[in-house]
Image (cartoon, rainbow, N blue to C red; front, top):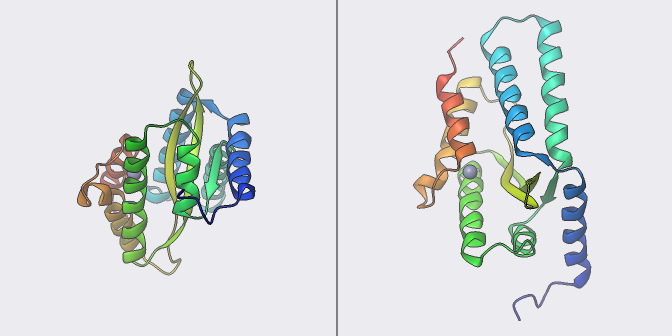
Length: 185
Ligand SMILES: [Zn+2]
């Protein structure tokens, strides 16, 4: 048995997080439109001279959208818990390994470049057949970094799965396109 140090209590906790996230799961279309809005509003904040009032407005909207996504997500502090969670979802073993390698590549790159990794998440989306999932990392960047440095590091983190022999996800490609399309202020 590989789960020798793993109590049933922890597994129950993991399953509980998944059940809770599923309650708030929403459609793939809504997810796409929330992501689009987050990109659009971030771009406005990054590129336009909006003034304090409008900047705060767009920031609070982004927070609202992120909260909706967060509610339909289950958060795991460790790669181990993340693995148990994925395994409980009837995902093929090779796909679980693929997801772990992919997210681990992002996380390693982030820490290598001085960011802070804050665990793993599974976003649950509702489909006709049940649920689909989007795995992702929680990343934190030092506040003192310049915008240029931040963007450079995020790009490298997004591209990391390619570098480590996995491949970027459609979401990663969207994010990279967004970052590369940003006009310099
Ligand atoms: Zn990715």
